[in-house]
Length: 301
Image 1 (tube, rainbow, N blue to C red):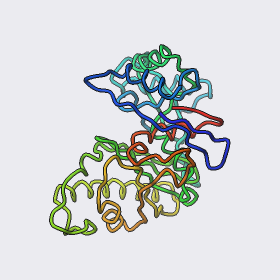
Image 2: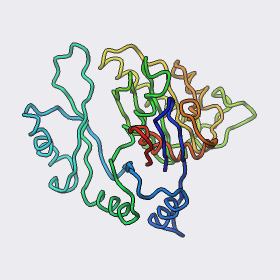
Image 3: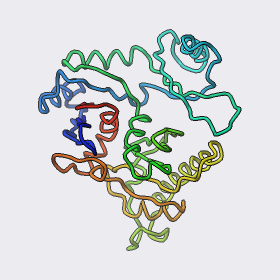
Image 4: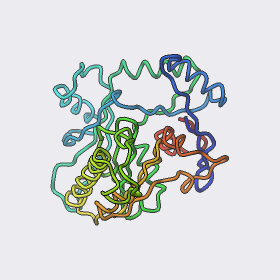
């Protein structure tokens, strides 16, 4: 959960908290505890979806009247999703067009199954949470990128959860490309060989090097596509979101392989806050912080 006030510049992070759930307590119990501790009921709230609660894909924008766009997309989706298209909730946003391109305009299509969303929205309603909006990680990450100094020239932003990751490429606050990664920081939680400082291949275990090389490959592919497809100047900055674990040598190794500037982000460099927030809380509240940045005033996620 995150609460942000955007009444000042930079915005102020008022709350950054989480409550784990598992075998001993379910999500409803954890939610009630979190809301009670932080007095967070009866406030406008944004819900951030996670995989597998939604899918996102690109497709050609239908050549129909504006009021018919969603229906035309729904018809296209019927063979692309594994549930009844009549149960699909759909939203779209534009894919930026390359300068001077005569290609058919493209759109991002976000699809969620109605029953999955109803379970989550009902849980919030039962706890007196006022749901104002529903967001996705691709756009919450874009919101954070908007506050980075590298945003003006273009920036790649990489966030790694435990078992999955998200890479977004943003230029002047516009999301150009997103890539879901099927690996996360667990792949990096491996011992290193020898006494090396981890800044070179010599000091990395084979498993750790393979995991880092996987990141390098995905980032390089995305940077190449961005430059060739959109015709924009190359992005020369990769920002890594706060990690739940420490990975010595990660920044130096990726930087040496990609040839771009790489740094780990500390949220305190782009937001004010009432009290320090450690790296782990920044990591687990990452999407919530990004979602709270989408609104004016004081908002929670």
